[in-house]
Image (tube, rainbow, N blue to C red; front, side, top):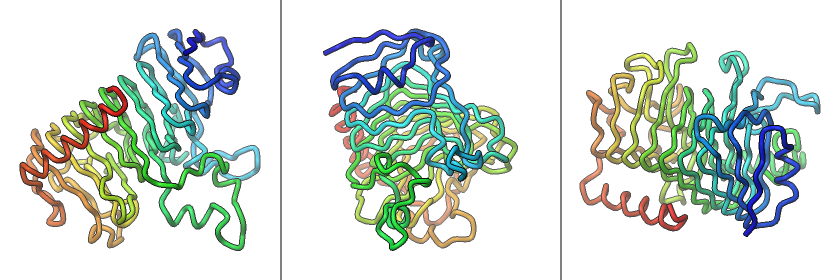
Length: 320
């Protein structure tokens, strides 16, 4: 094991590029104005203070990249994780794009690896705050060089296009801020005791989760004992989830909401028919005058306990 202490004046990407596995990086408080990729497996990054230790960048989907094309969603991250078994703890990752309505998607954290855990983190952005790989099957076909057109490097660098499936991501005691589809992707991901905070970016409606799990995935996004809070979102303006792709799965267990949560709970995704295959369910939701859509599944006590056990087992596998 090796511990390295860094401060905001250090080139953190250079350090990340030159560490060995099983290194812990201790971040001194301050603002790290850097865009970072974490590739080394078994890396732990530990912040001095969650509120005052901040990694911040401001890329957005419609910004023009150095290669002459738009960034698109998946190149906008502030931090991207491609190394396996990375742990992030006790600091803030922020995408400070000033206008997501004009600028488009602005990812704070992109987890493009199979195994990942986070504890006591702040993840802050508006649209598309947190991406949890793998990528949807159709995007893999379109951009991974499977077609005659070949690999499209402008979409995403090859080492970031994680597509193998079976990923397990865990988030405990984290604060996740956003507006539209701000937790999205295809991972089996568990969120325990997290604050999910919906902001106001001027749009009339927003959505917490945008899952895109394939039908072969039994488990998707699972929120257990999370607090669904308004950080400025208007009454009735926030939906728990909408399906980014067919068969997307999101489960909410023992979560508490407030008046900003729309009583219908879930949205169909514009004029698509994905709601017919969406796997959305809840149990023990409080603080909301819920009148859910008829395609929302109300779990039984026994089914809810199954998800609690899955969450507990996943967290324990990472020592959380």
